[in-house]
Every structure is written in C-alpha cells, then in structure tokens.
Length: 81
Length: 350
Image (cartoon, chains in turn green, brown):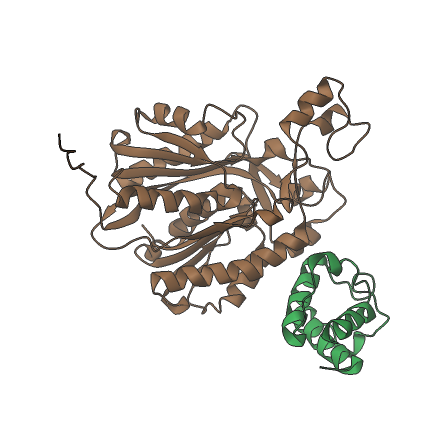
C-alpha cells in the first residue's frame, strides 16, 4: 500500500525510465499526451510497469480514461484499496 | 477372421530447416509516400515504428507469384528437388480466393504435384504454425521434405488513409524447406490462440457484408450508413495499444517457454527473429527476455515493414545474408498476430 504521494513518485520514476523526462515534471495535473508528450506505445509500457510496481491490474479499456497523471495516481490508489 | 496389424509410417527423430528463400517485390514505399495519405512525418513514423521503407507488389504480381519466387530459392539452397516434397504449406491471409488454395497452384508451378498442398490462416503467427506442422509431418513419417511459405500481399487489404496499421504493412514472401536431420534442429513448438481478443486485429467487415450491401440490404457492420464504393472493400484495422501490450508482455512469456522447452538459455542463442511487427515491440521483447548483447536481433522491419506471415522467413534470409557466420547457430523465432494466435520455436539456422 502506498499513499498518493508515494504513487506519484513511483509513477514519475517509471515515466522517467521510459521517456527520460525529469521526475519533477510529472505532476498531478499534467496530461500524459498533451503536456508530457507520451505516445500510446510508451503509455502502455508505463501502464505495465506501474502494474508490476504497485501490484494492481489496469485493464486496456481503462487506459483510455487515464488522461492525466492524477487520473493514474487515483486509479492505482483505488485499485490498491 | 483375424484383423491384421496395421503398418504405420516409421518415425523420424530429427528435423531441421534446410534452406531459406525470399521474394521482395520491387515497389518501395517510403515514409514520405505514406505522408501523402496520412498527416504524419518521416520522423514520427521512424520513432513510433522503426520503419523506413516497405516493399509493395504491383498489380500484376500475386501472392502465388511471390510464394513461387521465395520457394524456388529455398528449394535450391536446401538442395531438394520439388518432386521430393511431401507437403506444401502456404500461410497467407491475402490470397484472394477462399478456395482453391494458393498452395495447390504453387505446388503445380514448382513441379511438386501431387504433393499434398494447403493454406493456413494464422496471420502473423502463420510461419511458426507452418514450422510446427512441417516438423510434425516429417517426424511422424508423413513426409520427408515439407515446404513452408509465408506469402502476403497486404497492400490489397489496406486503406492508405487510416492510421492504425496500414502504414506499417508491406508485401513479400519467405520460404523454408524442412527435412530430416541426424541432430535435432527444431525445438518444441509453443503455439496457441486467444480468441477472446478476436476483435483486436482484423478486417473492417466480412465478405457477406459486401454482398448484402451490393444487394441493397443495408449498411456495413461498422454502422457506416453511407459507404463509398472504396469503403466497401474490407481492410485491416487494429487496436494498437491492446496488441502492443499483448505482443510484448504475453509473447515474451511464450518466447521464454520456447527456450525452456528446447532446453536452451538466452545466452545460448545466436539470433532472435521475432515477427517484424514494430521495432518497439522487438526492442521491448528483447529487454523482457534479457537477451545478452551477443544475440543478433533481426530488424528487417526497417526496410521491409510488417509483412505478416512472410516477416520471419524474410528476416531470417536477410540475417543469414548479412551474417553468414550465423549458420549452424540457434535462433529463437516467434510469430504473433490476428486471432489472436502465436507460435514460437528455437531452430538451428541453416
């Protein structure tokens, strides 16, 4: 179990590894596609790594709803609860 | 009266790939060409897919023509006369007749009549499915030599203006001859399907929809009320994200199972020859499999695009051409695609 801050930090690490973006750029209100310029393939890699790191399942159809970093953090937090 | 005991074909212990052939059609389609049809750029396509060019066949070159070109080279390299073939298997999803098969015509053209001949429909896994069957046919004693061909004219089933798959695809054919061997040359096949993802890659609609639409019986299954004549023709689509995820993380497990079944480790491999779907799938799979740097990875996709069933034998052909020293080494090959279906095995390179 992790709190939102820990999830955000973990997610930022994953994003950094996939895209090279600085972890501090990964903020709750940032859009994956618009602000962070993450394409659909990178997004899938991030999703699978997040599943492994946080021990949750993020179905394909759910990925389309994860528009912002905050969406992903909240989804993971709820899935862990 | 007593029932006589049947004779059964004597079993053959080992099998191997004896020779590889390739046919690459002449027309080269660049990323600049693609950008006339979709709003994109050379850089975007290279970064997302690793594809620089793809070959496409002109109107007068058929799936069977390409299959013949690849098959003749494979037979010659294998040193097998067409009359010695015990079966001919063609994997294709673009032979434009439901029947008769491409394989029957190919067999006749090669002078291999009356060898058994049939097509298989396993899309991008079709070549590995063909190897699984050829290996079983030779080892069971049903055939001495089997020709396996992957041949696709995907340019016939694409819509250049759509963005999910068409710009990835190319045409071509690759072929191998499988035959008996004193030493094991084809590891156990790990193959299967997951029809729960039937919708992930496939045609926009069925042939029956064309018939019904032509007869004025309503819209196509996609719900298009006013279809143009061009949109009547079924073309390929995919759900890229679903396919990418399945291709990398599920298929890496299948590839590992093929290694385990053959009793070899990643570091024993000389080459990794995955279906050439997308460079990023190839790179991510290699990462998941923890392949050491010594393993040469087939990257024919850059030049050939995704040619479905033809991609693995085409990539194998190029790999052996560029690195003759790989001959005799172990290669892990894995195909995966529409169905969804998958197949993998470790082989000794010819």
